[in-house]
Image 1: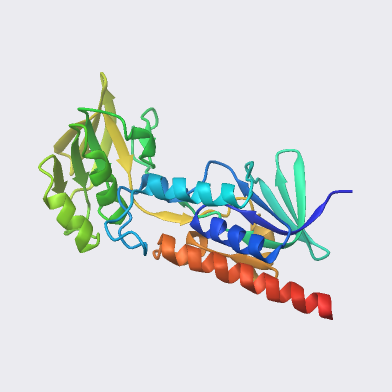
Image 2: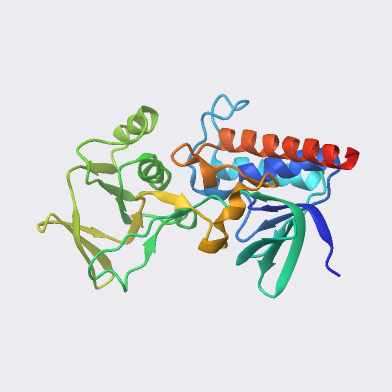
Length: 288
């Protein structure tokens, strides 16, 4: 018979990590599952400036390393698996990863978001990046970023090092990022921002990606990045099973539920709150 955990946490970003740490403090039996790696979108962050305790800011990767150290100090392991299906029957959650099914009485979903796909004519054979951490070590390249919000501007700052030239292409009439990011971009001579541009065609010419905007303006790049928005990552729940999200033993935390309010500090609060709610719920059930 499969072991039944008190809690399963899907996702090891800031929300999932915070929930795991708090559950550990309560002595609650849980399983933490993550398909890629610790930290979620923090891997892309050039500098986290609103996390208390770091007055000069901290890079996303350094903050992730501190998270990893914290988990290690508490002996919290991570099951590196891709969740493909979640179901709920007889007051028990089943979480399927490949051929393995894990069971729990409570479920925390901290799966974050997935990028909205950039779809344009002739782009099928072109590699489009949605995350930038894997490009941090490239040098002296031309990089085109499609988008005009916080992510696009933060990606530009992250990649502006090592002699790279960055072009931000935005369909809006003005930047949609926070002032702090805009000010950083304005100080970088190797970042250029263009507004009122609609991407019409993307194609490959030799080793370059050619981006045609408004049928005439052309940009040539070594790498193409799309930062056009994100949406909740809930692919592992079938449409007919979405009703389970309303159950009092299931908790959505962090970016998966916070829409545009994607901040590590908010996610961490969500994680601690969910763990506390579960602790109180289990205490009540044991006394009933």
